Structure formats: structure tokens, C-alpha cells
Image (cartoon, rainbow, N blue to C red; front, side, top):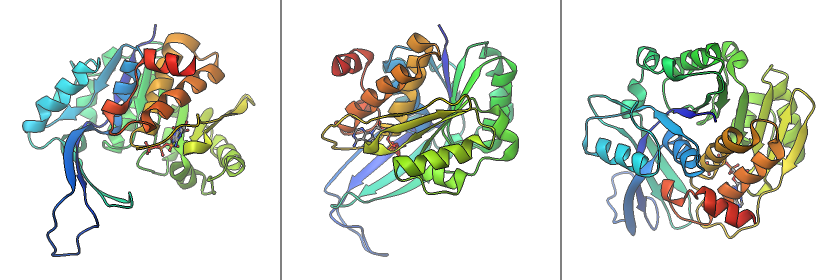
Length: 306
Ligand code: ATP
């Protein structure tokens, strides 16, 4: 069985629900506010662990009051936190304001995530083995991500890259990616083509494969997802029809659950099955509020599919 390693961000999300956004200089009251653990890396790790995979978080928290809460929360959700580094200063923080119409403003403080250097990541290289599955996003310094991808490939591991927030992928990184997972915006930034419908997504995916990436998955919210690879396999996995109340962490759940399924069941042979599972996991997430607490377990996902 392959271990899953997630090299990425750990954030505290500070969420304020307001009736309407304040004007510059204005002070307003929130309708409701809460804080909860998030960060794309941590969310994906929680999704993989809740789907039953042996999952390690490779990232950093600060020395503030959030640090303990963030690592404890990961541990309680089944993620191994032995390799999480502690940096002086603040942990990653996302300040999220949501207005009455559901629009949001997000201010991201990279904190400890932004302090993760290539030298730090070298301490993790010994963990990677043949068959290790390693997930990357774009919320830590790019140089650290790229150098760690190289180390994973040298060890015979498998790299899954979710370039979020959206970024053009530097040419030298393209050969380091085994599977690219992008949403509509990310696909458009990389392919420089529209990707908002399944038919447009097919063209965008073809353009992405021309860069040399061997396989790509393009997610399109309630339209489902598209898989395409260099061997000519291409199929659409429809989204489940559910009553969505909060789409936060849909994409992260999809990726973490997919990685777990590839590690535990499909062994990279049955992409259809793994994607149907990921789609069910993400569908359940959008029926619940919040980030990590909305991510379902293996049992819940299997019961939903049955
Ligand atoms: P987010 O940034 O909100 O976490 P994302 O933009 O990275 O998400 P999406 O493409 O919106 O990713 O969603 C990922 C997958 O989650 C979709 O391919 C689909 O399977 C599932 N999904 C998302 N939204 C819905 C929905 N409203 N109903 C059912 N499934 C959904």
C-alpha cells in the first residue's frame, strides 16, 4: 500500500459573515463569525486520511496560538504530523469575508507556509519511496515545491500537482508532473483557452497534454470532471446531483479522496472507479458547511455510492 505525502499549506481560516462589505474607513458588525482549520495542503491531507490512506502532512506552522490547534486538528483527523515544521512567527491565516449574496473577499497571510525553504524540504526526501504518492499545490514557495517534486521523482514516487491558486507552470517543472489536477480557472491560465464547458475543457486538456504532462483531470464544479491522458484514454465523470450549501474544499476533497483511492484500491489501473469515488466524496462535501469538518469518511462515501 502506498503512503500519501502532502507537501503544502496549513492555514487557519477566519471567516466573517457580513450583510454587505464595509466601505473603506467604515466599521461594521459581522452577522456570524468563526475560525476553523484550512489551507489547501491540509484539506487534501484530511481528505486522503479520512478515505483511509496512511497520510503525512509535510508543511509548517508558526509559533502562535493557532499552531497547536492546527496540528492537533490534523492529528485528530488521522493525518500524521510528525514531519510538520514549527517556524517562528505567525501560522498561515486566511481572512475570509462573505456577504449576504455569497460573494467573498479573501486575504491570505502565508505566514509559516511562506517560510518553507528547499533546505527545509530536504529533511523529507528520505521518506519518499517507489510508489509513494505526493500531492502539491501552490500555497508554499514555488522553489520548494519544484525541488521536492524532483526528489519524489528520483525516489520513484508519483507526483500529483494542483496548481492552486492558478499559476502558469514553468517549463522545467512539466516533466516532474505525473498527474495535473486543475479547475476551470487553473486550466485557462495554463492552456490559455476557455475551459468552462465540457467541450471547451476537452480542447484545453489537449493543449495541456501537448506540454508533455502525461495525464490531466479538469474539474468543472457541478458539471463534473474530465480525465485525459497521453495514451488516448479520455472520459467524463458526471457530478452527483446534490443540494449544495457550501462548495468550500470541494476541489481539495476531490483530490485527496482520489489520491487515497489510487493508493488503496485502483492502484492507478481503474481511473473510472477512482474518479467516481472522488466525485462522490466532493459531492458530500458540498452538502455540508465548512472546510475540513465537511470532508466525508470512507464509510460515508461508500454508503453514499451504494
Ligand atoms: P473549490 O475551490 O470550491 O474547492 P474547485 O474550483 O477546486 O473547488 P470544482 O471544479 O468546483 O473545484 O469541484 C471539484 C469537484 O467537486 C467537481 O468535479 C465535482 O465532482 C464536485 N463538485 C463541485 N461542486 C459540486 C456541486 N455543486 N455538486 C456536486 N458535485 C460538485
